Image (cartoon, rainbow, N blue to C red):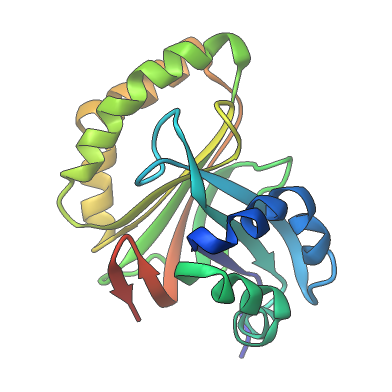
Length: 229
């Protein structure tokens, strides 16, 4: 039985010979998404250099975040859509994962995601943190970014991490996957990440923010040289 909305995150590293095609996705990519059956929310995403965290933009890495009405629509998008096939054809790396939310705080472009999963007692989870950064606070926010990235790189139980964004500097997101809820909580409640959260709350860095925890499934493809699925 279907249990409602399913999100899909797609990350692509565009092949060198397809860079012009890749840049075009930022201009016209959203128009292709309007025609996808069952798609209720989407964002076309860019990424930073290397793992995606930082001020330097990547010339090749980008992504999509999509929320579908049900799992059937999500599966059809990944398996059968011409858009997904085009991304695969132009990519040297392609990664996708399906996600069901088990908690959601805040909103993205005014939308809060439906919660339709249970927190797993064991096994992997995923998290998406996104924020619209107030322009006067951008410099202070980015001064802390390198510290939080270094702490994430060495975090026990972190299976996957990527930094993405809707717009340079001001609309940013972090996607991570973890061995368990306990591993993610241990990271979130200590060190540089905890200090960054406190600073954001104290100084009002964000005009809008959202934090979602997901149960991931169907991870497929390759990212940063590692194969999934």
